[in-house]
Length: 82
Image (cartoon, rainbow, N blue to C red; front, side):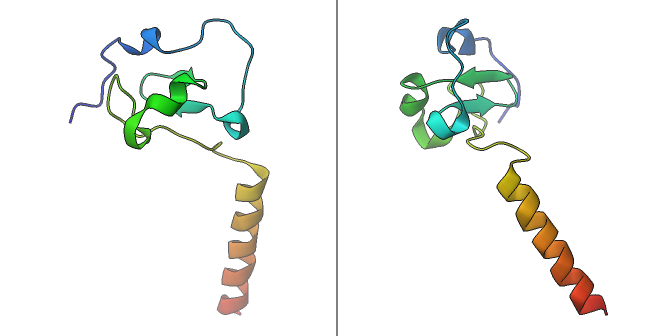
């Protein structure tokens, strides 16, 4: 499978509309660097981009929850090392 944008994603993205977040159903393709917004984001089969077939990101990379889980894992590892 090729990991490159084929240029079809511009048909699906929202142009200068109101911003929506992941919590409101937005999805992001990291290869095409495009955010897809509902209801368009709901038509993607298996959370894959119709342009490049890469898996769409449905959560932020460094959310508060992520940072809290990471800190908890680090505390657990420090406890095991001691």
